Length: 94
Image (cartoon, rainbow, N blue to C red):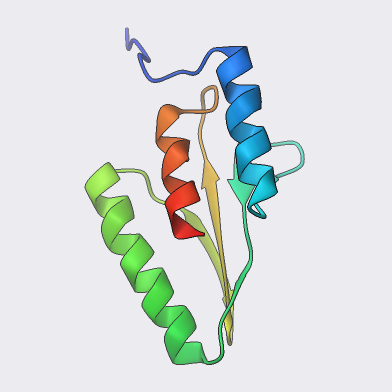
C-alpha cells in the first residue's frame, strides 16, 4: 500500500489552481492534469526550454507529456492522484 503524503487538501488545491490559472496554466478537460503553451522566437529556443524542463522533471521523477511545433512548447503535467504539491513547480516555468 502506498501512502500519498503529497496530496493536497481540496482548499489548498483550489488555491493553487487559482494561482496557476493567473499565470496562464489551464486544466486539461476530463483529466487530472494541467498545461500551458509557451511561445518562443525560434525552434532552438523552444527546444532549449524543453531541455531545461526535462532536466528538472528528471530530478523530480515527474515527467510531462509534451507537445511541440516549431516555436511552441506545451508541457502537460498529470497525475493519477489528487493535485500534488509538486505541481507548484510549474509556477517556476512562468
